[in-house]
Every structure is written in C-alpha cells, then in structure tokens.
Length: 618
Image (cartoon, rainbow, N blue to C red; front, side, top):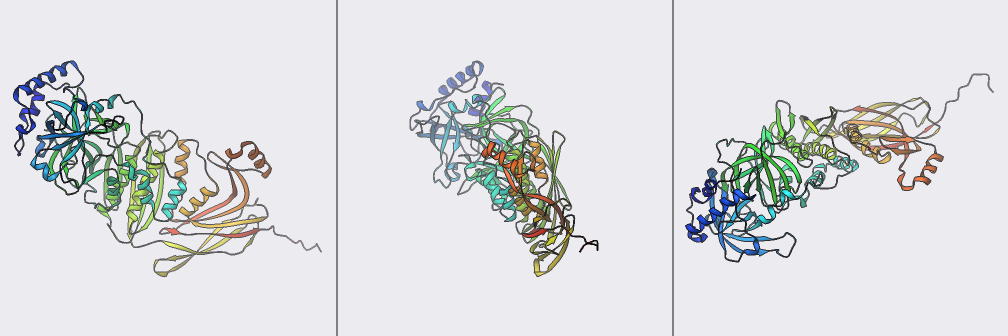
C-alpha cells in the first residue's frame, strides 16, 4: 500500500535517537516540511512512489539534507548530510552523488556496512540510496545511487546472470584438484572469484552452526570475496513486533534457516504498494532471482577501523527479492520462496537446514554447512580422515548418490569443497538442470591418517592367454612406513586378440581422471551428467583395468569401438567434429581400502594363445 501522511510524518517527527538531531544543520524549516509532505501525500495518491524524487542534475555542492537509517532497537535515525558533488555524470547510468555525513557519531564509526540502501533526502525529496563507502576512510564520505536509476530495476527485463560466477571447470580439472589437495582453492576461484564482490559491503549475520568460524576458514574466504562482512552473532531472533517496513528500515536476504541462520542485511530505500527498493548496489548481480526477504532489526553498530557494520536480528519472511541489478535490489512483499532441505549427519548429531534454491549460492552454502557441521562435532584442526557421502534428490524422482574420502589437516575443507563442486557442476550444466528436492550429507571422522601410496605393481606373469585370470600384487605404503601387499585378480576377456595388453592400476580418483582423458564421455542431457557424476570412483578404491590399443568413437553416453577403416571414413567426413579414443577398456575390477589411496602405474602385458599338444603330433 502507499504510505500515508502519518507514515511519512513518522520519519520526520517520530524518529528518535540517543543522539540529538541537529535540524539547524539540515537546513529545513516547518513550513517547508509541511509543503513537501503535502506534495508527497498527493504523489502517493496519484503516482508510483510516495516520495517526490530529485534528479542529481538539480544538486549543487553544499546542498544539505538527511539520510535515514535504522540503528539500535529498531530506531530510525536522521543523519544530517552535505552534498559534495556528482561523479560519473558523463558515463552511461553512472552517476554517483558524493555526500558527507554531518554527525559526530559517524565521524567515529564511518560509513557502516548495512546502511546500504538508506534513503537520502534533499529538502524533503528522495535523492537515492546511500550505497558506497571506503575502507579505512578517515571521514564519513559515502556514495549515493540516485533513485532515478533504482526505480528502473523493476523494468530492466527478465535476464538472468550466468548460473555460476565463473566458467565451469572440466571434471578432469576438478579430479586433478582433488588428487593434489587443491579442491578448496579451485572451487573458491570458480564459484567466488575475486571479481564476484559487489561494489558495496553487506553485513552477513551468522548464527547457530558455523557462527564461530575464523576469517581464515574456507567458507568465510568466499564471503569476503563476495564483499560480505560476516558477523558471528545476531541472526535468528524473532522480530514479530517490529514496526512496519519504511524507508530506512533494515531488511535481510535470507540464505540459510534451521540449525543455522545466515542472512545478508541492508536498508530499504523506498516502499510503494507491494514493492520495496533496497541496497542501492547489487547483492549478487543475479538479474531476476528469487530469495526470501525478511524483516531485520539492528542490535548495535560495531565500530571497526576497516569497516564498521551493523549486527542485526533476522525476523519473519515478508516477501522475496525478485531482482538484483546494478543499482540495487527489488523486493516483492508477500509469501517467500521455498528452501531446499539439507540434512548433515555426523557421528552423534543431525543438523537440519533450509538453503536458498540458487545456482551459485546453493553449492556454496551446502559446503558452508558441511564444513561448519563438522567443526561443531569433529576436529577443528590436526591430522584426520573424513568419509563423506552425498545424496541429492531431484524433483523428477531421480537421485544421485556419491562417496568420497579425504585426509590431512584440511580434510574438512576438502569435504566441503567436494560437496560444493558436485552441486555447482550440476547447477552449471549446459542442459536445463532439474530442480533439487533435498540434499543429505553424511560425515564420519577418524583421527590420524588412514591413507596409503601405491609403491609398485607386479603381475604374476607378463604373458597371458585369453580368458585367463591374472593375479596382480599391489604394494601399499601406509603412514609410519608400514608396507602392505594386496593381491587383486582380474580376468582377461576370452575374445581379446593377441598382442599388446596394458595393465593399469590406480586409485579411484586418478583412474577416473585418466579414463575421462583417454575415453571422453559426451553428455547429451542433464541425466547424462548425473550418471557421469555417479560413476566417479572414490579414492578409497584401487582400480585394476586392462586396455588394448584400438579406435573408439566418442558418442553421447560413452565410447563405441569401431574398425580402423570405419574410423578413417568417419574422420574424413566429420573432420574435427569426430572425437575418438585410442585405447579400449576390456576388463575392470576394484577393491576397497580403509583409507584414501594415491598413485597410478601402467604395466605392459602380452596376449598369446596357449598351444595344446595331443601327443600324436610330431
């Protein structure tokens, strides 16, 4: 609904604060206020916005006004401001109005993260949203996004940003990162690149599971890259008795609920009918999105030499964030969107969350919750081995189940990054992704290192016959110098031709990376991508395979062996469009170990048919 005369007057007459308002410095008087309020009431009846809007071209350096923002206890505070000038007026939609806050309190704390969106009025007319500040600034100087730009957010079209912040890595790249213990770094550069941060700064309220993590923990590195200032307290409290939403009120984009509460806070710039405008800068630059929007209430402002920020409580959902663009976000009041249920099972506890359904945020948040759930019940540091199982249920009644194991001091971060990588890979599919119904993660932690390295591989003989069983002895080096020998048997196919036969022994991750490189799989649908992920081997396994030289054609879903002549004919007709593999897989087996295995080797064998003598031949 439109704001009435009383609601507008509230921001001018009922606003209170522990710091006295210096109205003489704002430069307005009672007759002017009454006149402006009368105009605003008329506009509320006849137009889209309750406030009269001023264009930056009308400003002059030295103009004075007020910035309205919520502070402790839900109080709306009027902060006197002075216009310093307009920047970027010659660029396309690039105007930024520089202002200075003329208040002793903000001389000390500077521009506060969470003020983004706070409306700025010049002589009673809405200029725009306070949206930008600078770290370590010695004066409270801020940038204002003109509302003449913000009001176009609703009509900016339905374009949606790319599913993820960066280009999806290949499975081979992700598998190589797993083998070299670089997966957290690779996933961070993929899902939260340095360029992901918006130009503003948003406080991220974190409560419950994960609230005590340090700034150096893997999930918090992602938040910092995205320009979010994480606060370890202040989320999850009810604010049912909060005042109605007004310009200057605190709101939050909800990311996680349940046994943890995570929400990014900002301030409302304007309210009109069932819509509100906020932040004054992008949240994720996500275009048309749908995130829960909740009422929030400021607990206090925490001063910081780098960047002060608001600590706030998150209240009930009041609607949805429906547009996230260069000049701010748009909210629709009403029911919020549904969340994806996430359950994390540890040895002695189950944590239940709801996470936003978003191609970028869902993978990151799942990794965050996995990491923090482990930190609550498991070891925060030290050498350890962590088994992780992941099950994803989709709305088409299909599912994906995977297992993996990691060890080392960074095993929890590796587990978290792995879950993020799987979800992110599917979310960034070039095919239409199927929506996720639920996510389940199971964690099992053991102290110490349980893994081993493949020392060598020795087959019982190098010359084998078709259909013959070959025993392979695999020597494993465990932590502490203990050597274990495993005997693994594999049968050569009865139809295998005489000649070269290669024995490949590798851990599951190395084998999968090698196999994908030798025999690429071309996906033709989202279902193909699900099946591909489900067949990725765990590093707990030792894979033993037999290969022969031979041409295969890469088709959707796998490779098909063809005669050399057929391959040449296809190559001449299709050229670079034809993808081939030079080795055929003829036999495969695997065994499980107690911990992760690392290593790979190849041994050449020869196939020869046995000659049987019947005694009558010379």
